[in-house]
Length: 308
Image 1 (cartoon, rainbow, N blue to C red):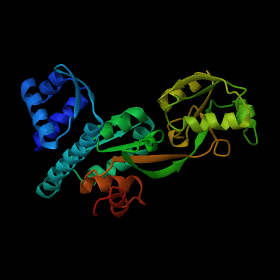
Image 2: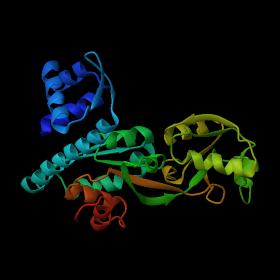
Image 3: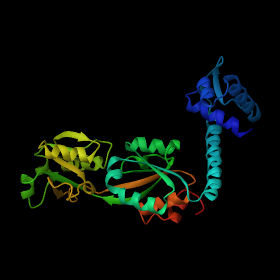
Image 4: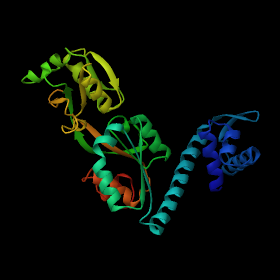
């Protein structure tokens, strides 16, 4: 048994059991891949795959157990490489962050500024996507860290840790009737067309839950993934906006007014996500602690089942 065989096995599964595609991805020949898998099966004394003639059509139950261990071994092999890199080049490298627009635009700028000042030789990449896309990018190893509010905690293969809580607010044009209300209610809010986040983004489930619990059907006129887009359409008079409170900046949003909605909608929690048992380099821990000071290296490493 060798790592090459485990890589072949993993790639076949990743390529939906297409050995030709796996061979192309690995820059080798299809017969060579098939031979190595047969040798692995013979050594283990089990069939890893179900075959129909020369085609692989499914993975057997013992094959699934072998695949799980193989993937874990390949992951730990990558961790070994990272350990060497950590000590060879402690002041250089790459850190890839997957996050949503709201986090990248409003929560991370100061963190990124401080991080790049502390680690000028680290290439930092910010990649935006939906919470589901973020989770998948971290799971695949494409990204080191994911940051989002929705969905991350739903993935068992990820370690997710709470960063901070935040509230929603309502944004309206100046002189809007809602500004005259002593205390905003959902009933009053529902009298106007509402512009807010797409369902998968930025605490939208908490907005839906608030209206549902109150027995009120909101008039959702427009949804977007971007708070700046929401505010633009509010400025055009198309409705009132519900956005993350962090997304309202008085100096920049001079043509809008903000009404606190913390008493109407439950707070949301932004989380960071890392693959289980991932080896995170020192500057990765530093980035997390800049974002959430309570998430020290010791706390994060313990969650990852690593030695700090």
